Image (cartoon, rainbow, N blue to C red; front, side, top):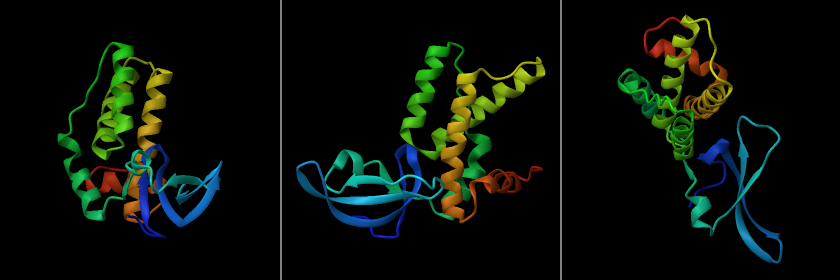
Length: 168
């Protein structure tokens, strides 16, 4: 069971703080809910029924600073997963995003950044769908890292670059 004021990661919503655990009535029944406030999205509130194992399974503790640093140190060794067929690539990236695992998000980011560099060398840009996957993977990863490091998501890229000894 999670506690009030605990920082957690919730599915595609990213890092949230548990504002309260409240008994509420939605419809005919009264249930207990985790009331989650996304840290980096000011306008939304998420209600997760405490007794719904499928939804509670989407909640997990935010990584620690040590876990973030370890992931960053391992980034050079994480393989890319380019798929030429757009439909297979979409299915692969969808599955990686749905896993909500930082390592999977890194695979997407590394894969699409490498492809982006190749496209730029040919004077081209990323396809819109690939650009969308890249932005979503970065948003989720940077939110998680920012939550663990107590910095803003906009500062995460520079933090990663400095840890890898690369210019920002």
